[in-house]
Image (tube, rainbow, N blue to C red; front, side):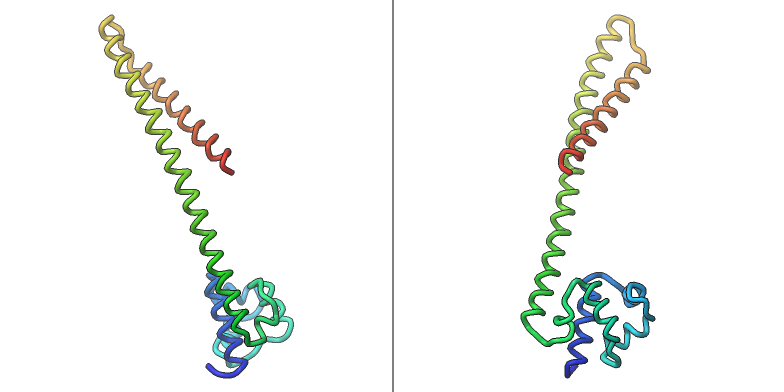
Length: 158
């Protein structure tokens, strides 16, 4: 690709892909056809001024970046892309940590429940008692405790 129009085309293509947009999705945002976006990206056509302004808004870049050749702008956009990816990774890690914490709380509460149920079961049978509905109700209480702890933990982090 050579010339200013081809550089413009490369920028649109790079920005669209880095924002995880299809040609159709970008076309919808700009109220144009998918074919128009395809022609812009291949360098066969250049959008009207109002569409260039709209593109800068959609991609959160300046019109100067879109229109002027500059390596510094290219690095800036790539840095922004990397920062977005890093934020997504951190968000996923935070969500994973929440899930792990909830699972650990659940394991702890259920282990405690089983210990109490096991001990209670032997004591109850030694005295001739032993009602499965009591064990089931204890299990429901343990489940309610797990839900309460997980919800409280998630709210605390948000």
